[in-house]
Length: 395
Image (cartoon, rainbow, N blue to C red; front, side):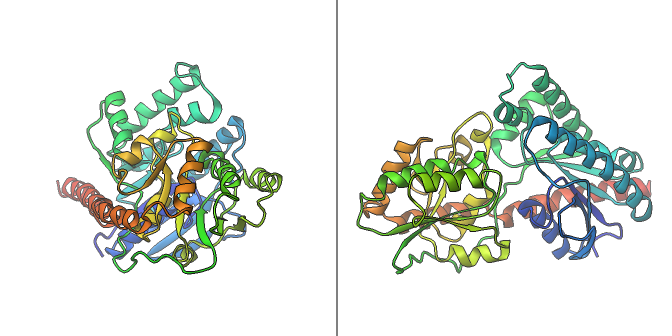
């Protein structure tokens, strides 16, 4: 065991469903650390459940994020319940490191009492909150809500002993806006899979895929509308397979029916994460198209790394955060509109693009940002914080 005292993860999301938190916990467990997880209550799952070397505790209420009031209600209920539960556990287990994941940013303050008694705190900024609220609720940049978000962001970043975020673009904003130093980028990528080479299926259909939550964030109406425009323009048979569930599912199903695409766009529902790799092995193209905005332009989806790692060519929008790591040689890039997606799909389906070359180039580029590299950064941070605590204890 690396340290006699366990580590605690706190996340207002479902666990082990959250891929980023799951990778942290698995990495720590594999390296000898005991990790407890406080996550959000999930229907049909137990309040307490063993996981790896630790325990999952589920508190709060399930997510049903619709209005800003519902967001705030969920935030405050989870804050209160996780505050009480973390401090109860801390009395028994004396966590050395507590790793808190946003959103919300103010969740980090549940660690106040453990921090006073010597626990070290990592704040993991999955999202950039002011820009998210601007995108989600149309808030103006100088509105009272956004100013409050920025104040909370500043306070949270300076409260933590170490800050982690997901892209260099977001790190740059945090540094410039909040003048912080202890911050590192740990991207939301996967372990490198050298055995998964390019393997275009010889099946009857050219299979395209999206997997994950169905929300307006991923703008799946764009590729669906583009598919309706290319359906009768190519001899190749194709299907768009959608795996997942979420708030926009009904809208997307109605759109597919309206466009007469029931045999072309297939909704498979949500499947366990461990089954996704088997699905991706049968796919010819991953689709990740977004409508760009102040929030989306900063994001880097874990789905992109999963497609690239499994040697699935990717059609995606030209997002600044994506172009920091990949270029035209690696990805099939388009603009964030139906016409641009239509043009690129037509080129693909007519065989005008060398998909194998794209997929292999992307996977080669991906070697520089794999989870192996991110994991080492993270373990270095944890060791540094533990060494700091141990040195203080000896003094």
